[in-house]
Length: 545
Image (tube, rainbow, N blue to C red; front, side, top):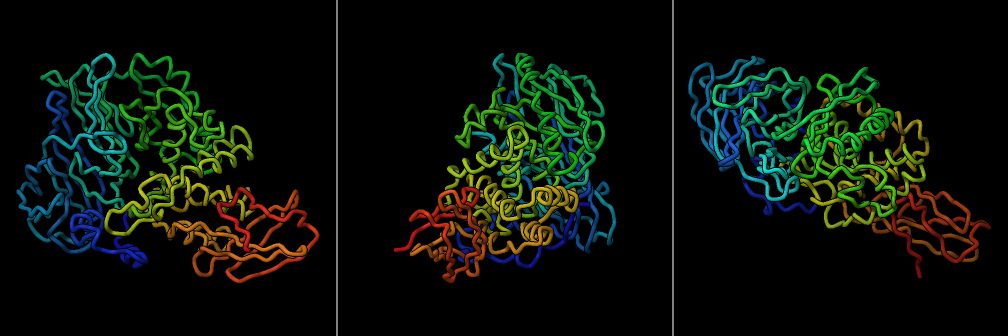
């Protein structure tokens, strides 16, 4: 059961310099664990939706099952305008509600007994917000394929799943399982998360597909893909036994997909060797062609990279290594471990999803071409780092942090640097596997991940985490070199910053343990008037005058 009633106290507090004035009342309702959310744990969604392509509308209902944790009679359900909540029923009784922006505070027929299992049925309809540039601008996607056939999907991670269906829309609490009943014209195929349980032909020329997920799932990962799909299959013999692989693409792309999707099995083999077994064997693995670039929809990964290597045909690292594999297959599938298996409670900590998954790109490069290539790849991605905002956002206000690429590649370089400091690859691999085992199918905080790494690696990493996650400052190793004596210290850093670092003097490699106070070493190794930093460390080096 994926539920924690309260955050750590620190998660309810603002960061240094946080001004509440930049957030709205709606941000607080969206991003916080309100009392109308805290008293119940969602256990199952039974979601029924019919899609009408001609007018871009949907209608249906969601039977939301839950367990009570406290006594209360008001429940918060989220549904974004312009979607309309038609009615809410519990035990056959209609419920009233008060609407506050995109949140509905529903009065239930009576106080809910402690630890009881209950459900409400929420009926809804409307024309959900249409994505202008999915997946970056979220919402429903109503497109046509090259042959003019309808092609429908959703991409809503940033915007949230309540853009199209009513739910408890906060990452801290996930449904333990989901049954989806999607209806569309019978000449189209409907794909979703998990496994297909039934397919029913209706009398009005439509068909209803029932897909079911038996593992916990993020709201934003619940997904329909509707279009002229064809299917081919494979299997993967992995750590959890035989994993069924299903590939769904438009018919005209079948042969290209058969060639490009051969990358899936080595990717899975690599990630299982680093992170442990694929987290959703019971639900299978699907790669589904989508009308947008990609998304990590659990057990039904969205693929729109044009059946080519790189990221839309380019190498984000500018090293050449990123053109050796398909970015969307690798990155979005990596989220099955970080994002879907391990999910952060608050979007402020989304670096755990993106930083670890961007780091997985490095590990896959290493798996194919060796450790040096993997290091070159992740170091090359530093050009994508902007340092315009901190990686970790403000808590309880639906703030994702820098909102750009820093949570990806600054996060990845932070992890690469910690691996370098740890200097024990076997232990590092064991740590990544143990992390996925320890937090298996759970929601977590960044502090939990940081504490786990500190303890497992037996390293004092907290100041390093604070420096790279909670400031935009890149630490500077200031030094002076006189008469073969090297003086050095950290500047532009958090108080108490104590990261060990390696430097180069000519062909000599030297390990240092700088602090904010000047230190010095003497030796015959300083053959040049300048020193260089080991490129595995994301720092700046500066010679003092």
